Structure formats: C-alpha cells, structure tokens
Image 1 (cartoon, rainbow, N blue to C red):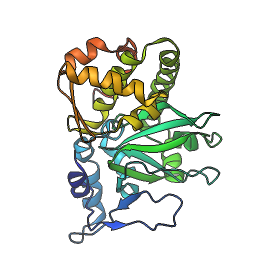
Image 2: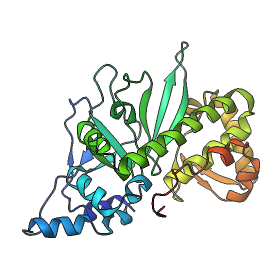
Image 3: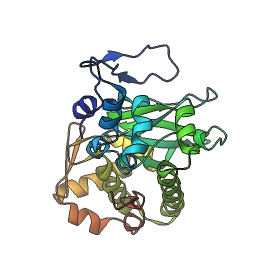
Length: 284
C-alpha cells in the first residue's frame, strides 16, 4: 500500500512540512480532514471492518477489527525522509512508527566513528518498542534508510493498548522475539561471513521491506550499514552488476535476478528473511 492509499484509508490529506526545530520532525505529516459528519457507530464500524487489511504494515494488518479500532484514531500517516534520525539522544522516545513503504535502520556508532547496522525495520515491524517496554533509551541511531510512508502513534497510547492484553500484545511480543533472533543472527553474520555474501543478504532483506522499486542507495550508505570500507562494497556491487544480478546507475539499484542473489547470499537470509511474526487467527 503506497502513501496515497494509506492517507485515503485513514481519511487524511493536505501535507505540510513539520517544524524544523522539532526534535522528532524528519517527516511530512498529514492532518485529518473529515469528508462529512459520521455517528460514533458508523466510525466504529468503519474501523472494525477490514480497513487494516489494506495496510502494508504486517503488524497492523494482523489485528482483528476491534483491536485496530482502538488504534485507528491515534494513527497518523507521515512520510519519512531518507537520512533523517527519528530519535535524538537523551531526548526520550515519544512516538512509535509502523513503516509502510519506508525502511528504517538502527545503527551503532563505533569508537573510530564508523557505523554498523544492528537491525533493519520495514513493513514487517515497528520502531520504538524499547519505550513501550520501559527500557532505557537505546544508544544507537534510528535512521531512515529508504524514504517512504509510515504510521506514527504516541508511545503512551501504544503502551496503553499493549497493556489491554489483547491481540496487539500478542503480535508485538511475537515480533519482539523475532527481532531478538534477527539481532543474534546478524551479530554472527558480521563476524563470520564474507562481505560479498553479506551484501547479497542485506540487499535481499532491504528489497523484502522496500518492495520491487529501484532502491535509492549509494556505495557509501551501504558501506556504513555493513560496517565495511566503500572500496570493498564497490568491488562486490560491480561484480553483481557485471553478472546481471543487479543494475546500478546514478544511485539507483534494482535487483534483476533475485534467485541468483539468494544463491549468493549467506545462510543468514534463510534464518532471518521475511521476519513477520506468526499470524494471529491466520492473517498475514
């Protein structure tokens, strides 16, 4: 589901640029606009139907209508800008983000100033869970890797809905378990697997979250996320391009032969690829 469809589904439009001075304003918000008065029962029926099945975010799409109806009034569509940091250090986490088409990375900063990606979150997940669980604020960067749409919700609201103990709680706990498994596997991957195989795995994970459209990436960005030198990324990316596995031109990368890319990836893709939690009630 693209950003336009999300806005229509949630009854929002008229974009505006968020204030530049805000600590958490790396996005364009879409204020609500009513298309006519509705009674409370009508609004509830709209929310409790299959509206969330239209969403790309798999966590929200997995919720039964009644559970989603509690969240709907509090979900705000935003368009996240590539390179923006969602949270500032020592400023607290006030919002969670359910990505739709955007992809978000969590990056650790090393002592020498270099970075390495710990996790990649897209439409299969949510960003901001540490605040829901009252954990200390993370000491890593939460940065938008691929620009796109997301649904934003206040942390206190999400904590309240989580505390109700319904399906939302089950979905978020299942996703948390999947995320922990990903973190462990990627830590092993960084220490044991060769760069070429890791690059293929990373591109597959990214495409799963961003979709089939060309990915706006530079070799510098890829190197920063894999914690490697740009020269090594360029060498392996050129080899994939020369073999017609990917195309790469002017900062746009497209996967041409996914089957061969999977064959060249390390085993970690089969371990952590497509990490959506087990569906509740058979919905994926």
